[in-house]
Image (tube, rainbow, N blue to C red; front, side, top):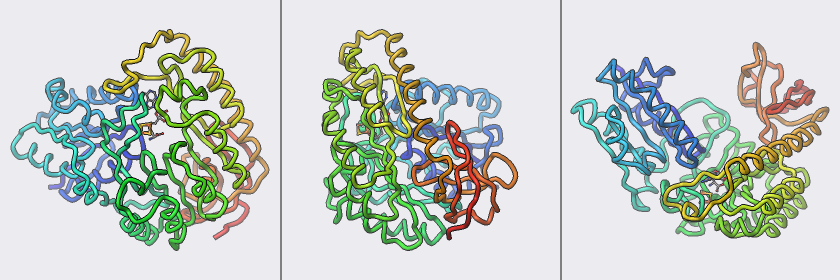
Length: 443
Ligand code: SAH
Ligand code: SF4
């Protein structure tokens, strides 16, 4: 008889892709995915450790599984992802109802672990980091889900050691996947009807520079640009210290590359950037923005900011504030600094009061809300090319898709347009999406 599993995913694109692998792998041992934990034989959390809030959320969700396990002792409860990697064995001690813990390098072991728990009622943990060769062999495995946009992993891990960040400790050393495998996967996805690819990794700009891969990131982009059937390319995340002039030029010459770049700055103050170990200055960063806008005048930029890094003064924060006013990001992801055990910044004295950090954060949100509104309002009245992703939640006959700047656009149209590029006139702009009217089908 088929068994079922319930899976919740937290965190970044890397976890989203790992969860897709989990779905595929569990399918191979006849476990079907269900929407409600109450219906499942196996409950899984794929967790994020990047900030304390994400950690608390994961523990909160784990706690909700306890009464289910109390009622049904046969139920299997597992935790994977970055918290599992960081905490390992200790999780089994802390949560008696947890049966298995699998780390970021051990997703492929999950079927075997689940079977072991189910058959022998043992508890198990796998959090070893794998060596480079073994990891490289484990990149593929996808589900056959129908979608028109997909993430494709091009590298894993991170060697940057930004002083606040736990990622290098929970994801391991940076490795790049061979380009022929990436291209094979993209060809296959194109054959399944996928039209937009987002190349993902913690630091995609350094693709191929530390490994024996035969190409660098610019060449990889050129090769993906040549894949028939793929209409749009995005990539994330970029690190400002590794963005080359050649990569910037791609925004002016690769016709499939979307005119959007997520380029996290983290802070606008040089003293803080140095303390964060980011490897660039404010001036260097602003120079990149100028060059990007010179080769692609209507490019839109998005970013991440950390407020309240240890030692950040009001003057430092003012530098971040003025950088935001200058760059005018179309979207901004803002975080209050969250100390992470084991990172270099965790040892830096931090005498800024939480209330002061919160006040800076709120000021920044207000400024950015204003900027976002102004940036997106400009679109009203323009006709944009939209890749239709499917039917929208807004109601019958409503479709949604995205423009080149990754903004969601809702409009009326026939379901058969899903997976095509259409022209839509933008009629209204809301906080998180646009509303528009179909002008014509472009392809
Ligand atoms: N590799 C990506 C993603 C890193 S995590 C990158 O380099 O951009 C995503 C974002 O979380 C980071 O850009 C940073 O803004 C934020 N972040 C990471 N660690 C943090 C911490 N300890 N406290 C607050 N925000 C953090
Ligand atoms: Fe973390 Fe920095 Fe690596 Fe991004 S580049 S994952 S912020 S260490």
